[in-house]
Image (tube, rainbow, N blue to C red):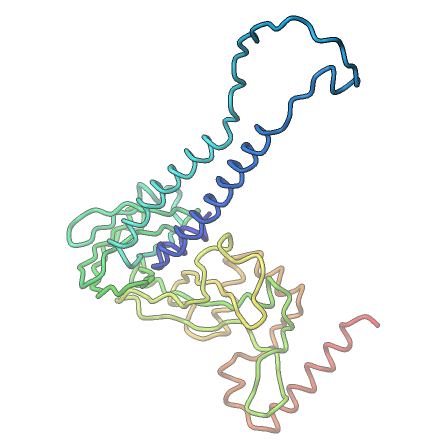
Length: 315
């Protein structure tokens, strides 16, 4: 359900509404056809069951038999279809009137009360609340955005020109940056030695820090493959796709990829356990360090990591 609402807020409300309506319409028609077929089946009698042929008696007026009530399934499905149309229509109006979304991640105990968000001096209420991740709809066009988190004690002002489908993350504090961590290996088991280098056929294992976002004065455009909570990660990773976590981190700990990786593992204990399980070590280079290596260094790193992997892999 969270992924469906996020899909709608990203500007795909018409597609989502059409798919749901089609599924319910097919189910409704099927139930009607099934009920009609059952109502035309011959009714069994003692004669047809036992094969008896009793002599005909005097003709009597048939007693009036009350009709059996029809099945409530088609009616319930019809009502369900109408309810979905109304609900999805409401979300559609929100999404079409607000073709962008603002995202806030905070570690406060009560985000609903703690966060005060205004757009053009009008208060906004979240349409999606997944733990400490809140999503707010926002109309297209230029806007003045005011954010205050009571527990942080800092007010923030942003300007943004919202385009259709924009998903922007707001920093709750000037010193709170954001970092993006690749989850392809940590969650989905993709081989860690999959970072290509400038040498054809030479792949090495790098720390999974993808990017660091240190400009907190402007809203951050959320990468297409990034999710703001672990619950939102897809169940399966597409063959050619990636999935990453975008998480807030104090800017002092996001100065370079190596310190960032250490800080993220301390913040999310599960990441540290996953890193140890798949074989990440403190000696693994960052992507920036790999891009600065010459051919000899790349080959040496490739052989060293390959030998270590062979020692760790049971026969």
